[in-house]
Image (cartoon, rainbow, N blue to C red; front, side):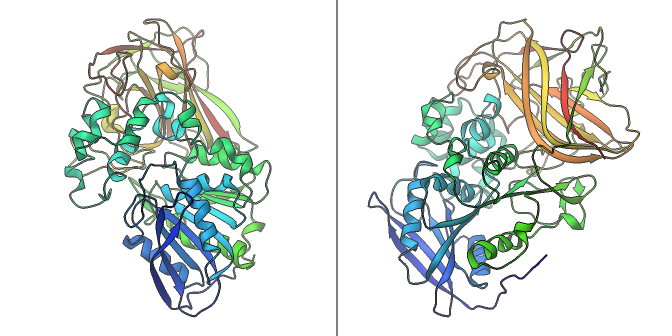
Length: 569
């Protein structure tokens, strides 16, 4: 395999605040980093709402310019030096399309343009792609989704509150998520617990935010959300794409699904999944685990192989590799695959069992591949005023817990502090006799009833180590009103058993011999998800709470189970 890559041989110059005129006559600000030697160069475009001259952006742009690329950093419309009014998602497609056309008129343009960026920097790429620009050559989006309703703001019907609330602040101000002192304003317990949700903009920054109010009033997957959904327009994507996902990012299921749909029609689609979170990787240690030296990833190097191939016609060997590259946690190795889910997957049900007392780590809950017989159901009370806290996991921002002096970040965190609660049902397998690989999508099929007309059910998969550590792997949630559809609401009949299918984050983990699989069932994961107040009232304007009495069944008629993607070895 060839590894001929561009080298950092160029000095760099900056063209500051070049203005590009959009179709609506708004002028957007561009900072262009170029090799100092005059000439034409392949271009990489990054659009951001977080300011182009933010230090990480400058470091990134200089790195590429030293390797013979022209790099365009553009402030989104209405942000920092760009004119206009910022409205998330809405203008990124047409503005990105017009920006490519502007680049094509520049003296340093050589005929090829790639797009790059993570999070919002990936989002704009998916908004841009269906516009079919003749100037777009290749894309490299990272840690982002295409469906802004079901995969972002309303996962399982619940409000992904850490994302939705944070976006309201950071997209309306110049406050950085990581800025010193920011937690005095938002990202703290007072901020998270504020009710009603619709007023968080006024409470935090003193004014109403129009697009946040739109998010709050469009409470089902309607025409507003469908107009933004780029996953529904994948048939219009006609360029090679490499995606970077992460096992502890919220959007990996969406990215793997997008890759799978595109790969059916195009052979130039790639995806790789790293053992990290929404943020840039910083080494091999994440949360309570160290994934070893193989886990250390230089994302720029991965993208350099991609863009050198597509923008410079350099043979880097990347297209000779299988299209899917996964890090298998537990074994801590990389592996190439040809499909997702893996073609050899054995989807295996692991059933919940107990003697009617699976409450907490000290209860009688168990988890086995054997179906249940006659078993008593488990019960617990969910009080929205005392929700189960978010502790690491598949999140994109920090959270707080009462016993923590510092913010808690996403990732593989020991869940035992939560498993001591009686409103968390805990089901553990016996210690494994042999290694068990679990790689793929996860679904919890739960049969339950509630005293409330609307409530939530959550599920979590945990790897239990021989020393007792209960390391988070995957989580999911379903809001009862949306258990059948995100396009309409159907409330519960209190006391009646219903089926709840909880789509959980995908994972790849080798459960070593002696480890145990564990499933946690509860009704809250706060503040990653907003608290269901159990009243069936409007979730953004209501403030009234009530306790819900929950019953989880696991017997012959109602065999609650986790569908586990087992990979034969």
